[in-house]
Image (tube, rainbow, N blue to C red; front, side):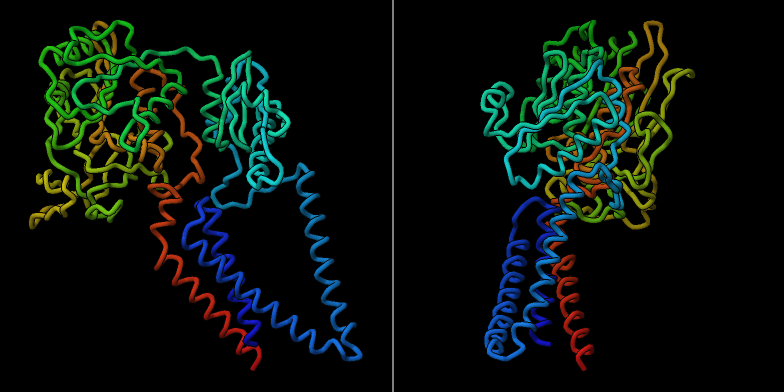
Length: 508
């Protein structure tokens, strides 16, 4: 019984190790320890069985006793290999995952339908690369849903093509259409979706980014930069331009919208007047404003009907995220009905960091529309100690402070003689940075806000996620690393103990 228990414990350890590796795609300490411990347990079991077999090999019936187990092992290996080959060559497939991971998102099907012609997808691979099978399945599914022709090339035999397309590693995909191409080094549904959107011919809109007063930088590729947002906007059909606020006299006439990402310094009155005149002409503005910074843009938004007090939203329902005090990084799951948050619900959440509230306060004219579209939970309250929160200190809740739903995303629509002005005001800018852009549905929020501001409602959608539709912040990998210890080690030890107890009772 002791040897069987050791073998079962080894199998459990290897199962947890493999599960951790395939979830995080990283050979971390938890994975390494489990794999090493499991392999050692199985080796000890095999060694004991071999010694026992050698001691009994001299018996008259030893050969027959060993022959049946050996034949069973060989038959199991042959059957497994045959089943794998049949599954590989068969076009039959089932998606048994709870989150329907292997079914295409509606946005991906729309991107395929928008292609102006047949697109070639070439998979470059090396033999024995385990990632290739998943990519083949994804490409086959894409080809069954749209005008996509799939080819495969061994990387070692395609040096010239690899140089031409910038392919540097196995499991890369090149999409070609009408002489243009996009190279995808990490082919997931999300990355292939963005490449398809780039290849599809679509009318470009010009989006101006305000610069010069400490705004988020779309050219920075580190965690605090916004290069991911810039790339996503480009894939969605926007031509990005910049203007310096300090030198702004008038917003350029070709601007479909102006995007302001978290300015840190006061904006000159002349630039604020230019933005105000632009809105009066029917322009559009998407403003991401953080607490603790009074830039003058807040006062401009007040004149258009918003209220943005310099306080921090604290939502105890969100708990502690990213090591910050509980509630200062709210997770949103309450929404009004509006295109900016179309498709979001209690299972499709947003993740903000140290956000300020944005209240729809007063319509400038009766025909205007002001509306809050994304809210905290009912337990949220406001802290005026912005400096303490910025330093990572836990805010103290004043006695008798009631909880309430607090808006952090609001919109305004204003019919004017020069056209309809549109404003989206968000109480945080960090959520769109490279580190947090693809956490939960943050990417969808900012892109759909820009689409609505530029009157491209037809482009509003929920884009495919990296791993699962309902991934927890910050990413599934980060979540699992935070989950180690109580979340994985204790259940693993409990399972091992239960296996040993079961074997003892079975042997009793």
